[in-house]
Length: 255
Image (tube, rainbow, N blue to C red):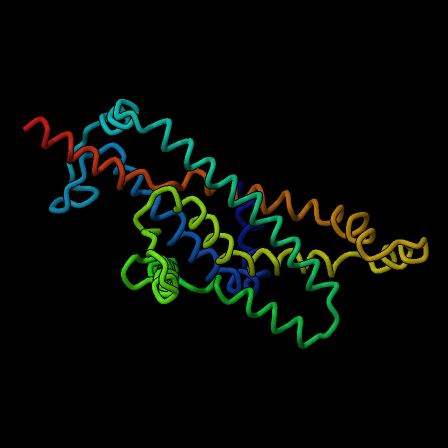
């Protein structure tokens, strides 16, 4: 046991430079990924603003009972799964298509400009994205309704109509993450051995055939990794707002 302890500290001293370099990343993961996990206790409490997360009274499994008895459990779970499946399928298809087009298009500066333009929305906050959606689809001040009004057409209440929101959510989510995924797939494409493209070209394959026979199969590992990472987002659906509204309605009915 003593020898193992001495070996451990010798390794710490030996690799101290690398440990110092990695320590900020470890610290960020601990602060933003592990420390917030303590907030999971809120699922077993009746949250009150005056008491906070840890000062609110315990209710055990009452919140889960309310969720499954509310009648929204199946609908909320289904919508969350369907939204994320749409994000995953459509997002990855467009990201692969954009990466392939950027790789095939000639012109180094043109490629960099398009890549930067695609990647820019990734850094925009979701709050800003919500403001953009409001300014596009609002009934009174939305850009689309202003155009319709200027053309003598009737305004459409897009923003307050639930039927439009599945398409709006999928569009903005895909638009925001398009650049990030494109960069990932583009990096994977550039790592493909150029001899494979040269061999395909010598065999008479055209551009489309090279893409389907060489590029796409080599992107499969990257697609699987990104898909697995995206599956975790299915469990990040926000059920709170809908359930809180329903709980308030139930409380008013009881009173």
